[in-house]
Image 1 (spheres, rainbow, N blue to C red):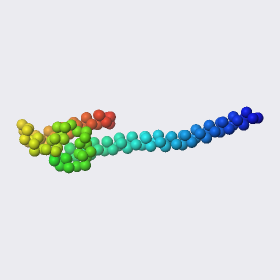
Image 2 (cartoon, one colour):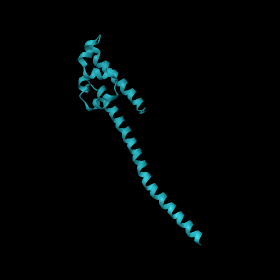
Image 3 (cartoon, helix red, strand yellow):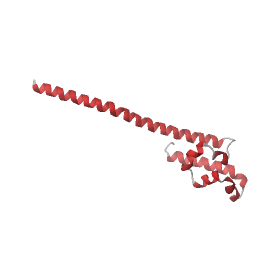
Image 4 (cartoon, rainbow, N blue to C red):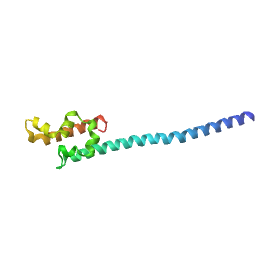
Length: 123
């Protein structure tokens, strides 16, 4: 009888401890999954909004440099593009055909967005 009570107490205690640990660990794991999901969604939204603006008729290097999207992307962009966005006149002066500046920058940023998308493993 004494060994049965001991076994019941050990079994009950183990169940209680497992339940407590499970109830504490499960929300933490769920929070981690949600955090990763939210980060991924934010990255997808950022690249999507940048891509939409770049392909629009409103696109211009100096205007894009004033957007919050550019500010968020700037650390991830290649140096030559940052220079083109922040000093468009200087870059245009150095080009053979300054009339191609807008399209050249547009192609460059679209290529960079694709590169960033691959780097972030979104595609």
